[in-house]
Amino acid sequence: MSGTTTPSGIDFTQGIALADIPDAGVVTGHVGDDAVLLARVDGRLHAVSGSCTHYGAPLGEGLRVGDEIRCPWHHACFSLRTGQALKAPAFAPLACWTVEIEGDRAYVRKAADGIAAPVTAPKQTLPERVVLIGGGAAAFACAQRLRERGFDGTITMLSTDADPPCDRPNLSKDYLAGTAAEEWIPLQSPEFYGDNRIDLHLDCEVTAIDPAARQVTTARGEAFDYDALVLATGAEPNHLSLPGFDLPNVYALRSQADSRALLAGIEHAKSVAIIGAGFIGLEAAGALRSRGLEVHVIAPEALPLARIVGDELASDLLNRHRDQGVQFHLQSQTTAFDGKVLSLANGDTINADALLVGVGVKPRTALAQAAGLAVDNGILVDPFLRTSADGIYAAGDVASYPHGDGRARVEHWVHAERMGQCVADNLLGDARTFDDPPFFWTHHYGTDLRYLGHGRGWNSIEMDGTPADNDCLARYYRDGALIAAAAIGRDRELLELQATLVD
Image 1: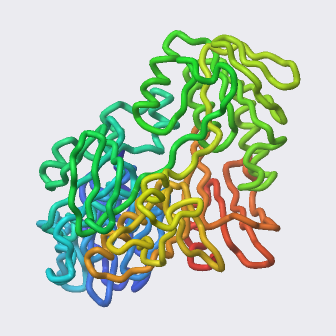
Image 2: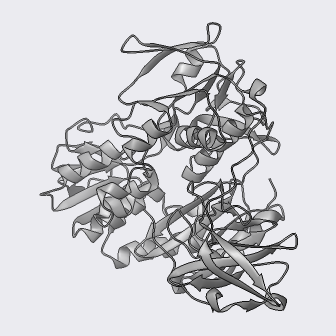
Image 3: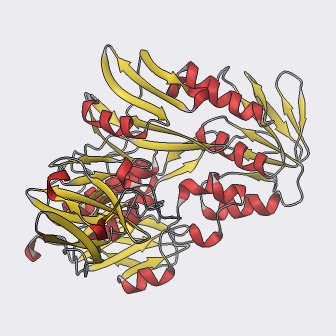
């Protein structure tokens, strides 16, 4: 889903004095109805679109770093020279505009022909056959980056999903709420894969990997040879082995098919119970509440999300949901579900026409483990995202990568996409280590909370502003070192903090 930024600022067709264009930052303006940014980079003027190609955020409110402009909403990065989308979650480039200098003024009046082609590594360094196992964020981003950079070999994507790669964060947000159309959800149209020679196999279960023969086999009996293999198998929802939790009206929420099944199952429902109060559970609660359903959330903790965001932000999120009528059953455990009534350990019961279970996920490592790869709460990779087997990489939720004095495995959408892009760059010979800090956003009743960094293990918080006023910035410290930050309404400040985070 994307939009456009409302034009504002200088009318570049009328010109701007060269002296008014700073060496740092950007100048926000427009050409007709199109938002445009003008920037001076190494003494030359460049003009690009002012709307992020991901969700249409106003890039003029973002942060310039060197020759990049970073999106204020979801932290996509673009080249100010070429418009190229450098880092996810945006994949499409910004439009470029022609800058004309007349006397002591600069004018932008017409769009340029295109963007400069990205530089590709020498041919002899490239594999000829790349196979990706997975159809999510990491696999898509890897395939897209390979083709964007001119890779001419074969790309095969083997996905267990029934649908092409989709905008998974939207499944618990606008799509579940009914405010995002079905056509907004795929990351690309079906034609994209054929046009870019990405051989996408859906409903395709890989059953074995043979690292010695460099071959994978599927449940259909197909065999795919590879020079480079990318494991982007992601994670799967945890299940609760409780009486009644295998009934048809008990749902998980991971894939687009899951979301469709849930929507079909609640078509005539009046009440829904959600087990788990993580970000997905709370987003789903908000989406279902917006449909007019009675929503109950059951969780064992006293204050949901406090371990991640701290008491003040967690209390604010809880209050937002309670204000909208979501009913919480905290410090509670479920014991059984008979299809209509959910029983709790304290003896309480909840009438529910459907049950959504959101109690976390676990990495899909079985294939890697069976193939002899090193596995420990994820597939172990080195700083270049290489596994313990030659020619095999891992990216996304399943990858455990070096971080600080230990390892990290991150289950965030943008992180997975950027890992996929890093693998693609390394397949092209870049030898790039993966060191991007995690970033995610969560949406609740029109308010977005954005979170940057590895927040695990913080022991003090510095809060500036008030969450209830939609204006706050929380800094998370571990023994005095800034390791993460979260913001509501402080997008630019959050971007600026990225360079100061400590692993």
